Each structure stands twice: as structure tokens, then as C-alpha cells.
Length: 309
Image (cartoon, rainbow, N blue to C red):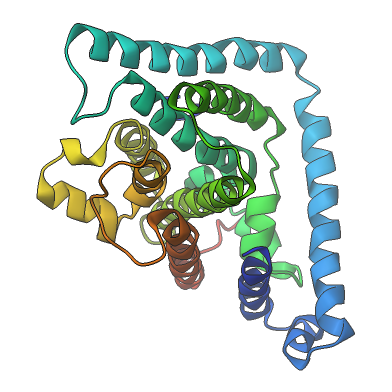
């Protein structure tokens, strides 16, 4: 992974509510709750701003073609090495908690999809510490827009697509190995799982990054979270003791990113019984966790101290 160590309407409503609460002084935001044209104008405005941010970020990143080429060589190598290591482990030892290579490859690929999207859209949350130390929130607070929106969309990580593309390739390869049903129903579930997994990852990084508002430091915690996420989404959750499984399900819902949905997709005996199926619960958990992360970010922002002159 880079750095460190290396539905839809419902989410739109949630994010609009967050934007309104975060931008307080803008009358356009308040008009969302009145219904009518004001709310849609607000949404279009935020989409337009994101488009400009993304365009500028892409232009900046393309100014360094050698950096892009080096990333293009390193990241796919890392991910394809990961799946190769899974095969070596299973071939030389035994299936992991009943999961053979095909199953593990599917689990790995499913986790990489949400990781790739986080690297593209939420990479600024990894650098909250630097934003606090450099006083970057000063200018964000002066603008009549939601601060969290500005912070996250201020750097659209175009190069992060290099993380996403190998994940797509690995997932398609593994899906064919396990005989994944590419029907409309399964594709819809898959989309919900990936969106939910992305929100869970982004929420965890947002909460940990927000620690910097109090301590001025969160980088090492972010690196630890990235490494933990990498390991716990790569292997079956049933490998861990019951206490760890409970933590990774109810306290830090990492299990919903890929493990529980993979159990349902692969028709395995489920470790957790929930109504409507585990794949449906991933976006629900993602939305709840994202709302919690946003609240933590807002609370931390109140503790922000300008870097001064």
C-alpha cells in the first residue's frame, strides 16, 4: 500500500446533512431541509467544486511522470506478490480455517476493491497530522463550505487508481476461480459491499487521523491502522481468537469489509447470523460508522489550534 508502509440516495442525504451541519452559516445548506430547488443547488455546487478539485489534483500529479511510472511498477508487484504468497501458504501447509487458495484469493481481491477506492478518494485522512501542524485548516474554516468535504476532496488521488486496478484484476481472477455468479442481484450486492467497505475504511482513518486535533500526532497510528487493515482483510476472521473476532466485528467493524460478505458470496457457513444477509449489512455498518467518524472529526475540529504566524 502507498504511503505508510506502503443506497446512493441515502448516502447523498447523509452527506448533505453533514455538509449542512459543518457549514452552518450558509443559507443554501439550510434550504435542503425545506425541500425544493435549494437543496439540489447545494448538491450541484458541491459536485462542481469536487470536479474542480479533482481536475487540479490530476494536473498536479501528471507533472511528475517518473513518479507515476515508479508507482505503476511497485504497487501491482506488491499486490500480485500478496496473492502468490497466499498460494504458497496453502500449497505448502494447509487451508486456513477451511479456506483454500481460491477462497482466500476471493477474500483478498474483495478487500482490495475498497482499499483502492479509499486510496483514491480518502487519502487526505492519512495526513490529518500534517494538515494540523501546517495550519491548513485555517483556510478551510474561512470558506463557506463544509470543512470535512474540503479536506477530503482537496486532494483527489488520481495515482491511487494504480492501487484500484490490480485489485479489480485480482478480484475478477479469483471470482472466476470460485465460480462467482455475475447475475444482477450479486453485482448489486457486490457494489453495496464495496461502497460499505470503503466507508468503513475511510471512517477508521478519519477517526484515527482526528487524534491529531488533540495530540498533534496521528501518523504512526495511521500506519498501524493501514497495516492492521491489510492483515485482517487478507485472512479469514475465524483464524483469530473469539475476543479478537468480537473486536473486529463490533468495535472496529473490519470484518464487514470483506470477510462476512465473502462468506455469503462463497456459500460458507456464516460466523455471524443477521437478517437479510451479511452483504446487505456492510453498507449499513459503513454508513453508521461514517456518521460516527464525521462526528468525531467535527468534535476534534473544535479543539483545533491555528499554527500561528
